[in-house]
Amino acid sequence: WEPQEPVDRGGADVVRIARARRHTPDRAGGTHAEASRLAASPGAEALAGCHTIQRCVLETLRLCAHAIGAVRTVVAPGGFVLAGRYWVARGETIALAHVAVHRSTEVWGADADAFRPSRPEYGE
Image (cartoon, rainbow, N blue to C red; front, side, top):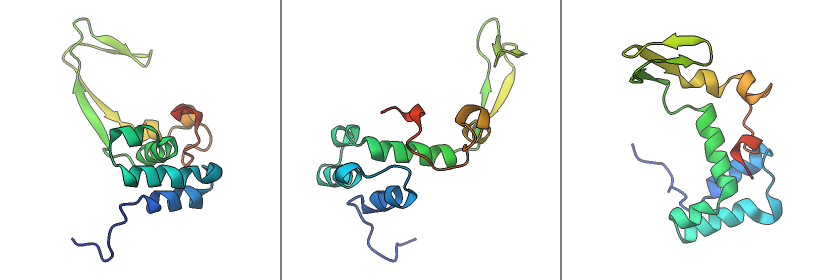
């Protein structure tokens, strides 16, 4: 597959998404400034200072799970109690559904299905 238009490596798409959603205000050009810094010097150090972009990415990953879930085998010698309610013995297999937690109103509140990168769970 080839893109029909050149890929914007300057971060403008991230800026447009953040502004369009209006959930993460562009404080004095903050989102644009982050995208510009990242485009000028891509790398871990530049990304570490891009808090708005990080929040948008985390919220996108929460809502659009990269995997449906996971399957794990219990290795704890004595087993363990899962979620304070279920006893799971060593050697048993557990299937976890990421999307159930990512869209849970118990975890994320009444707006669990809304794109809101300003959630306090993502820090300041």
